[in-house]
Length: 165
Image (cartoon, rainbow, N blue to C red; front, side, top):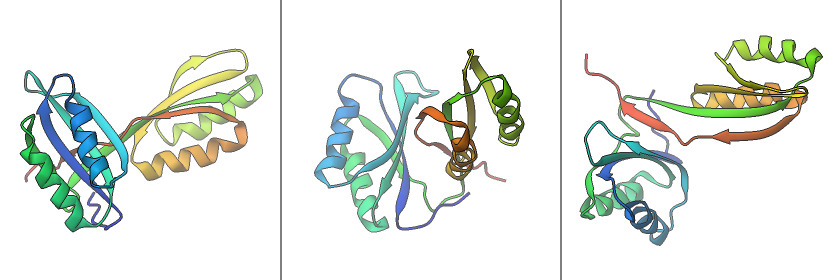
C-alpha cells in the first residue's frame, strides 16, 4: 500500500530507547507546527533501540525537512519518510460495546468480516479487538455504531517497508 497524498505522511525513526527521547522528538514536531496524527513506539529488534512510526499532516517537502532535522538529533539513529514507498501498515483497535444476549450474536456475525476477536464479555457489554488499515477500522466502527459503542481505543499506525522481490 502506498500513501502518496500530500495530506498525511508516514515517517519511521529508529531511536535510542531512553528517557526524554520521545519528548525531544515531539517537541521538534511541535516547534515546526506539525500535528502528530498518529504515533506508535516500541522496542525494535536491536537492543537499546526503539522504532517509532509517526503519521504527520503536511506537505511532502515540509515533512521531509522535519525528517532531516529529526535525523540530526543525537538520539536518532535513522529516520525515513516511507509515504511514497511500498509499505504495509496496521492499526489495532479495542471496542467496548453494549451487547446483551440478543445483540451479541448479531455483533459477532457482523464482526467476523473483520477478523475480530472477543477479548471480554460481560452481562450487557463486550469488548472486541481487531487489526487492519484505517479504512477497515473506520468501516467496522460505522457498522457497530447502531449497537452502542461505549469506548474505543486505537493504537497509532505501525508500518514496515515491503519485502524486496
